[in-house]
Image (cartoon, rainbow, N blue to C red; front, top):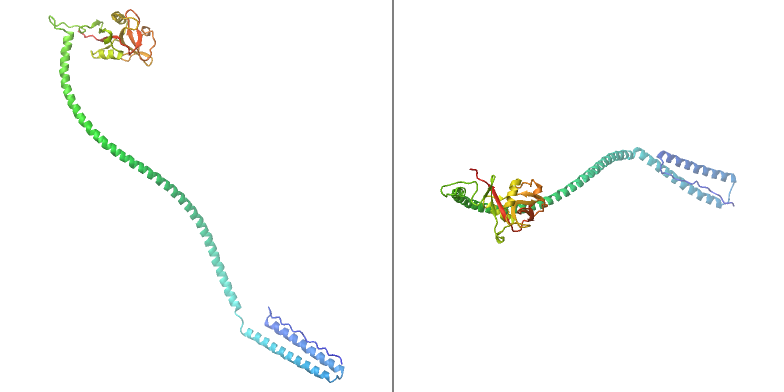
Length: 350
């Protein structure tokens, strides 16, 4: 007896991304295919004629399996229908949630935009604050340096102030001493004025006695006793021995003590008069006159320059002074040498 081949339809459920009507339609298609397959099997058995005793048992078993399978498919079909009806009557709230999520997304995007703008502003403010901080840091550094310099200067000024206060105290002490000395000098000047007045009277009397000696009645002359008259000047010839001779400065001081100066020559007549009166002189031994070298120039005691350069042939070397030698030209010798001297003063007008 040939074996009976029974073919069962393969059922594949694809629920992913399918709506309820599409799923129901697919289940119906599968059921129809199973039904057609069973009818074809029954038709084949009818046309084949009687079969042995074992075949009805096998067929009966297959029919039971097919019936169970068909019942299962019907149960699944009604379950799917029930699910579709349930979901149709109770639609999911995914749309509302989607709208809610979209609204939240929009709000979050807006908030993100605001936060982005705020972040940009904060970055800009941070850069500005960084620049300001750097500027303030530099300003602080400069100010700190200035403060240190000013502190050092303040310390110096404080020390100077202390020194000035000390100097002030010393000056006040000196002022007090000077005031005391001034008072003493004032007293001395008062005393000296009194003495001077007495001396003036004595000097006046001396002058009268010098120019107008009281011999057989007073007779006045233009020059004092022992002074020689030439034109409007009086001269005295100082010719001490060598131990008592003087330097140029000493001779000028000696003339000053007699209210006169070393002789200054103004013309040839006076020059010849001085030369004739330069007794016992020769070479480098003669009489001091009021001519000496200053700044490489020959000058008289009153500071005037020598007008006639022919009177002094020797160059004006500083430290040298002129002497008059009898019947010779003037000679240049060291001012520190010892010489005789001639003094001159104005004659008294009678």
